[in-house]
Amino acid sequence: MAKKKAPGKSYRKGMSLVELFKKFPNDEAAEDWFIKARWSGHVECPKCESTNIQDKTTHPNMRFRCRKCRRFFSTKTGTVMQSSNLGYQVWAIAIYQMTTNLKGVSSMKLSRDLDIAQKNAWHLAHRIRETFNDHEFDFAGKVEVDETYVGGLEKNKHWDKKLNAGRGGVGKSIVAGMKNRETNNVKAQVIPNTRRTTLHGFIESNVEEGSEVFTDDLKSYERMVDFDHKSVKYSVGEYVRKQVHINGIESFWSMLKRSLKGTYHKMIKKHLNRYVQEFAGRHNARPLDTVDQMRSIVQGMVGKRLKYKELVSGVDGRFN
Image (cartoon, rainbow, N blue to C red; front, side):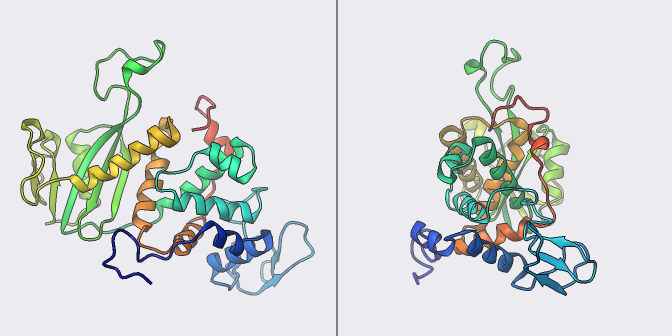
């Protein structure tokens, strides 16, 4: 095992493609792994939480039956996998792909790699993204806070898509984020505007009082009375002043935007927050071994649903 002083995340135990297919050679092996990852090997009824479970029932689709409430259920029941016709091996490979690709993976690539239709790969990826928003972290000590704009340039839009309301952030979505320098953890979310009440609320709901908060010189950050607030003056070309800078969170924005340009090309506003949670969750899980990252995603699937009709309602039908 590599020493923790080695460059990057070299102390982590990764998983090669050869190891992946040895671990998940078929649906049966993949399902056994999902059972262990979800229930630690002790199957529990999703309805009544009883552990008095009958395995390998005669039901064509439901492997388990609860002897207490007499309900049939499967490993997928009560998770984002519920009602999915995709096999467990497909789910396992997709989780691996979305865990190990730091800039994300497009639905087109998933479609080709998994030999499934693009719309199925798109739905699959968004269901996995639902699992990335489970982990909450305390932000204390030295915390960097910044906001960024995500979206296409007005000048590059088709004439009927232009808002004709100015330049800069016009027509773009706003994402606020923070990074803890001690733990390296990141939190980010889509926000409606950059007003003082919005940005102060984002900070106050996530950062411990008395912490050092570093920002740029946007006026909305002024008058933070509960924090030791310091800012760099971007307006006059000052980007670093001793320990005062926001380079860490800006590095996270860089990764997010490179994925937009190189992997997805477009993120519909309705789905943007799900992409943002994916990148924050993957960033926070990077110190873990690959198999532990995958296990964390399976545990985050429980209690969630994301139906296809919810994804396509109110959007233009393109898979982004």
